[in-house]
Image 1 (cartoon, rainbow over the protein chains, first blue to last red):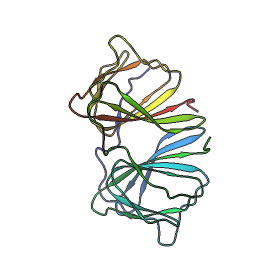
Image 2: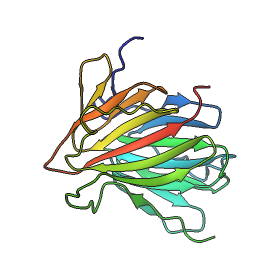
Image 3: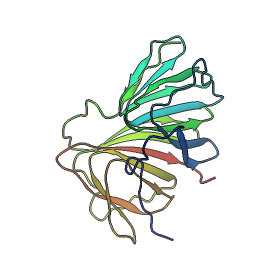
Length: 112
Length: 112
């Protein structure tokens, strides 16, 4: 077996990019773990995420604001985790334009 | 539906405690997500974790060292993630005694 080495999710972040970057970390039958890098990007005006699966999302670095339909906007700081049930309409209304914002997103099928 | 609110995994950490603290965040049929708080604790001398499931672990804060059987010790810093396959014998050989070390651990059944 080759040696197991850590992967760092916060070091050597890229500079500003024109699009969000989605990187798969772990894909399994019932879930998918990904890292998302934002640099000022937001969900396009008037669009909402309306996902068939559930999502647990953790802000690892940077700063963002999340709008969940029918709620006040949430300001997220590192360490903030939010559970978004399937079909909970939401959009990213702001990410810090001055630094990379790093998200960890766990998408999963069932609430068990 | 009641409002969805973030939970912060890094704020308001407890002070030093005599034992590690394991907190379940999300338990689903195929996986279990938990936060682990360490404050200087290590796996007891001579003991190893030998788990029937896989574990993906991410150091969120603090500092730790992980020993995987047959490898050199790994020094972990915030952002470091390690995938430990089932039955990969490992032990936590050091956690910083001067601050809380916060782990995010995703235990899952299958490698797909």
